[in-house]
Length: 143
Image (tube, rainbow, N blue to C red; front, side, top):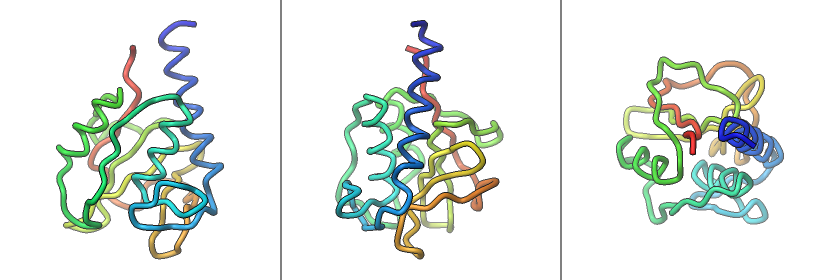
């Protein structure tokens, strides 16, 4: 298998797992679909499904932090950071900014995005384009 095939397979696994997690409860700092997930927990579950390891942050506030901190974690996990003007592809982890002081991760799937929606209290699929401004796109880097 070539590195490009491996990259494509892992991206597909990330997107597939995200869709499978739709309906899981939302819980701040949640890391398990059985007990609830936040956006970082959702991303962690998807990375795990693609056999990618990552040092998942804990103890963070729902608001604050920086795009650079998030980029550092994603780069260590094997992702390349792309500019927000790139078109997200299936399996990308997308960093959006719902408010001036809040960051949120979503997973790009065919036809839309999956994310842990605090207001709705669960992981949901949102069809179409990102509903918030995209700040960074994280795509699996070539090994």
